[in-house]
Image (cartoon, rainbow, N blue to C red; front, side, top):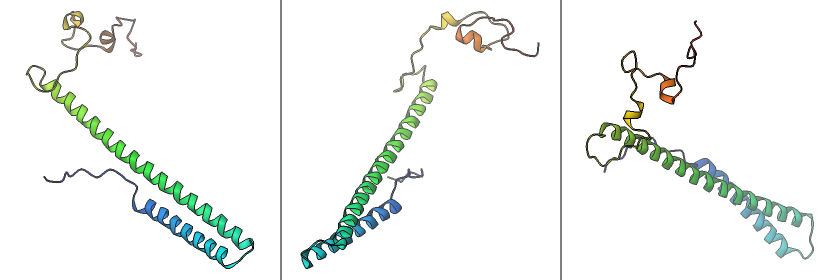
Length: 147
């Protein structure tokens, strides 16, 4: 089957993945540094606190950035599906208008009122004013400001 010529929807990728991986590398570095400090010395020093703080902070940053990337990816996929669904609905409505008389697969939208209720004698051919469509009848000058 041939690939469609439609542009692919936006999905977060390379840049987001770069920052997640970068935060992960920094987190791994801090955890290794903390492990080396703990194994070499018996007492806690300022370097231990610095390594522990860096390890915890960069781990949390990596987790938050990873979750954000996953949420953006899912939102992009949902958005693309919604756009496709809207195009399908629009196309079905378009074909339903063309196939209203035939027995096609598309069912036309039902109308709330029959044609007889709206058939009133009009002057000017088949023109229908907005006020006649909505049921509001002759309210003075119908918004004409030139008079």
